[in-house]
Image: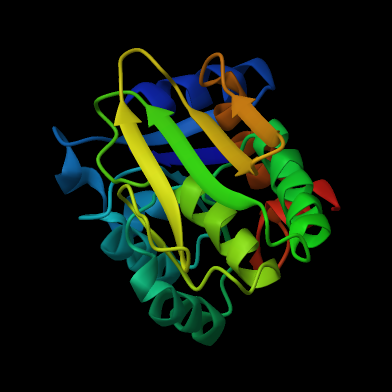
Amino acid sequence: MKIALLGYGKMGHAIEEIALEKGHEIVLKINLENVEDLTLANLKKADVAIEFTGPESAVENLKLCAEAGVPVVSGSTGWLERWEEVKQLFEDKNVTICYASNYSVGVNLFFEVNKYLAKLMKHYKEYDIKMEEIHHTQKKDAPSGTAITLAQQILENISRKGTWVNHISDNQDELEIISERVDPAPGTHKIKYTSAIDDIEIIHTAHNRKGFAGGAVLAAEFVVGKTGIFSMKEVLGL
């Protein structure tokens, strides 16, 4: 499989290492120093693109992949207010996109645990719910895309919370998410249900980037030869 890496920072390097170990080939690497190489012609050399950049460049990168007809795996966060626009373009061009706020297999299993726990807790109003997420200082968006996904799952299942906020809140209608940026933390997400009697807490802690990178390569292998809009739920068969 020939891969174009759009974003060649720490995550891009981790993805490259795993992809090469699995016998794949990297035919294009794009970072801030060679953005002029991100062309339709160069993209078309790849079987799939893996896009991990930032909110300021993700949408244009994805549009270019759609124009090139190259399936793409995207893990960039902070741009999802334009998801419907991007999704429509890929549908119109009949090009495949897989998007996930987090490609770690462990985190995606954690998503399923979070949804199940929220369904169990929806009737127990004596429990308040708070969230915390910790990432490295180079993380550009807050809260993280993973935290937003977790929060949305809770809101979908627990009606007493109407929205999430990224600050300390005394409003019982708001789901509080506290974001911390501490090096070298690759990512910790905590959901805590608190009552006067006890606490129930679930936590996912990443030890390094290999889980995210390995999941992204797995998703790339999955989308090649397929057509549609996918997430890690389909990749993992959840």
